[in-house]
Length: 157
Image 1 (cartoon, helix red, strand yellow):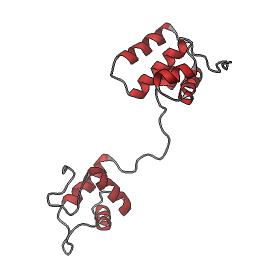
Image 2: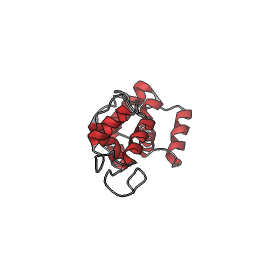
Image 3: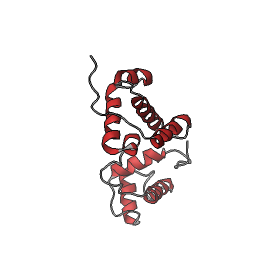
């Protein structure tokens, strides 16, 4: 015997139109489209297992979307909440300046830039107030920069 639904999805005509528009136009992220399909199917009284099978997702996802809709409304069910956490310490400009620094000739007495040397130079030139060498490595890795290759730089592929 199927369990009674804890979170019943009842859509207004406007909400149903919105969800149909989302599922028929390919301008939304796949996860938003899947969530819209879940809500439409739940509104048509399909059970969690039937929705799971039809969309190839987990029952937990179906239950989660139902719950988010009932407790928080349509936007809460369709879109992820902003993530908490510490904001980025370095801006895009900071990252670009460090990458540009790595593209310059190594200082006199050095054959090439080291990660530690780049971190020290970035602080010395007031690019940033302070930066760990591991962060410089991460920034350069993200830009696919090479400190040793000829013609190195962020635009190198």
